[in-house]
Picture (tube, rainbow, N blue to C red):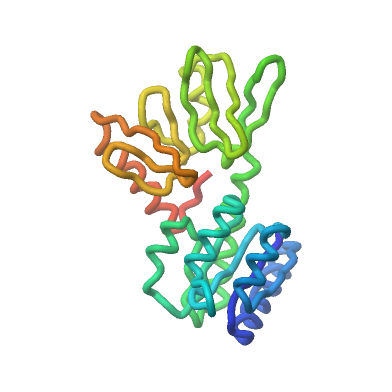
Length: 242
């Protein structure tokens, strides 16, 4: 895996770097780590360099960690973020951005180990995919890339991060393909949303991270929103969600 550390404290960077190296040695993980004391330098590098995991301090010179995390998710939604900071006050904002963990300085190696174990569990879900017939071809679609699925004119429409995949089949035949994955929620008739792509909700709609809105079934609204709240709670508390 490739890791970036963004912190304006050289001492904190050194400690975290040592912890990561220890983890990799003990868990037999190959990794590449790059450090940044400037958030601007990191964001410039992030436009061309690929990182699987980013450790962020909250308080930086020009941008705070929350702003940097938003930029990371916008540029690469698969990149995971772990905050490492001395501040407790931004924890709720961090988890609303689906931060993987929130390490309060000074943290122990055991706490860092738990955070990296959580990352490895989360990363495993990127190996999961479904396969659909698109025209005459079989198309593989990564589960994390699916934002939502709906149905139109006898076609399943899988709205992914890059494009819409259409397959001629009923929703009843399609839905079992996603049943093993807890992140998918029936929000309306013949419509399933990937809760990992939900940014917020207002009244009768889910608002996705790309700005799209999906309706929430009025009759089932309370149950649907409770399911979403339970999912987010489990995510924040380290539940393994595949």
